[in-house]
Image (cartoon, rainbow, N blue to C red; front, side):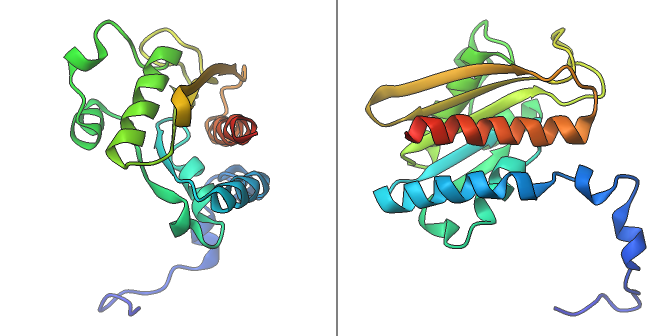
Length: 187
């Protein structure tokens, strides 16, 4: 892959930014869980699709970091805005009725929707407020709702409250909790 004409490579120090590498997702804590999920899905011949918001893609990144992901990972999206909700998931206001974002019923709806859209065996959703402040619905930073849906009408949802305002750490914790809930669901 070539560089753009006239471009200069960035020094490594410029790539580090304001956050130490450990705060940029700390994938080392996510990949072992993703590996267990991958092993289980591959052994069963099952697939997963992801809808995430405040985890910012870390759930998908962890699952995709495991070699052979194309055999079990159908796809996913960071559903962060109303435009993504409408255009990536194809959902309308009428579809959600009086549900609001960052709730367990909303997470179950999105998990079912992404599962159906990508014809996956399993659907995951994470929706919350990573911080440093809460969301417009009154949820504090560190709040997220997670849903896992699967074969035989399997459905589970849970809420996590970290009590933290640290955005990168909340993102990592949201991804970790979602992966752990999914791993437990796979039993």
